[in-house]
Image (cartoon, rainbow, N blue to C red; front, side, top):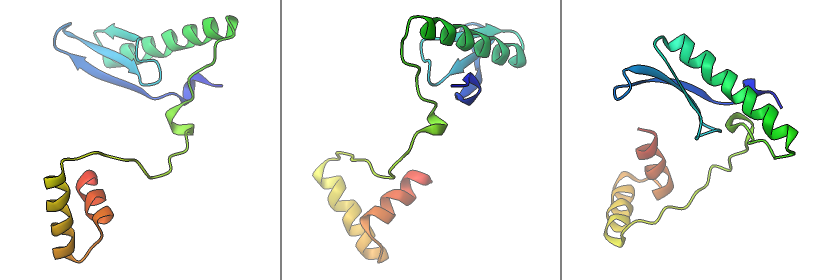
Length: 107
């Protein structure tokens, strides 16, 4: 599996006063650098090294988020009064509760 398929992100860390490189599939790893390009390069190298170590120990590699299948379904528990209010709002708009919830989540 290629470490190029993982999800990388660079953000600013006010606490450290530097950019931090992150990889979603390896949440315990990070790389600090003064330039964002260096933070990205650093985290990519760190993930590559971690992958070599994991493979050498026979550990399973995390599946890249981009390669996972998503069903489009998930359950959310909400208070009954919120459920009622949303159901009424959907009915007033003439749409399903699923469509209303999807629109609210997307917006």
